[in-house]
Image (cartoon, rainbow, N blue to C red; front, side):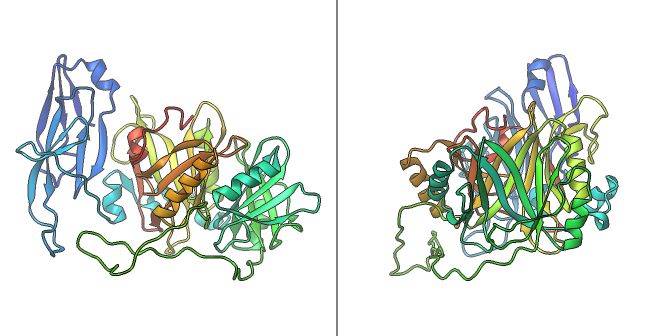
Length: 458
């Protein structure tokens, strides 16, 4: 942003981006324009306040910024600022050249999202979205898939941390639950590999009837065989993906046989509440709590986004974009951009909800990307990762921590060839969380973990 491309130099003014930081100009010497443009120029990072990093292939490129001195001793107050240099690898250095250790902290949503943001109500108004006319979703409840080998996928899902709650009399359908509040979190039926969609619970029968009135809807179907019963409507989005909404499912009975995960007490370098208490763990699958989200790779991103956000109370939490050379896709901060991915949540007003229950990313082909299930904590996830590996299943990517959503992630292939994820420790948002924008790229996917597979978003 705000670059003046010179014949043999590049001058970048970062001052307008963050006016609270003391920043002038820095010069990158002898960088051909084409090489400079082809690199990922900017990545927003959080230290104690927002610092802008410029990344290119030159290892000698560096930027001097400021950071706020962390609390000292028992103090909770953040102190004065001091200069810090960020090199091309994203490493932080003090003026004497010392490499700074990593640092994590919890910050409010407005600070974390940064200046490339917009209030949710403003985004809806700008896109002529009337929330009063939407089908009101309550939550994402379960996934629906078709598998050629029902017994094989059953073994996998048990190793993944689910339990069979019911099998149909003909043995062609099966429902799987976690230990959370839902009757089931996964439905599987026998047949050729097919994605049957995610299923959202709606507020009322009126919402279900409104969904049934949309073009291409299946009509209201009674789920007589499913645990908890209820009624279901299946819709088709503009690219033909199935989307299910349901109403009237009864809550599950109290499951006294469930062995619920225990909160593990952790000691750090200053706070050590665990005295004469030792942490011990039992190997096995990572018990699934609930369905968290699922995502699609789409070809018509704008049309898909418009359909989901207009018909349902699905709202964007974060967009990822690529720079555009023209006025097309002009963003809220004046920069030309094209949105290529969205992480969206179910808007429940003041109530906290998951950072995203649904996501989409632009792709040359249309297909489901993955579905994701919540587990208890980091140790549960690590033990589950170890268990799946020992059973001979194929890991996709993980374990690591996402930036958007903050989840600790672990992706696997199921036995049919679908991607499925465990996650823990995700962010919560509500109507006051602003819509954020960030530049697309591998750096936007994770703050730590294995290198992302090149084909991950394909």
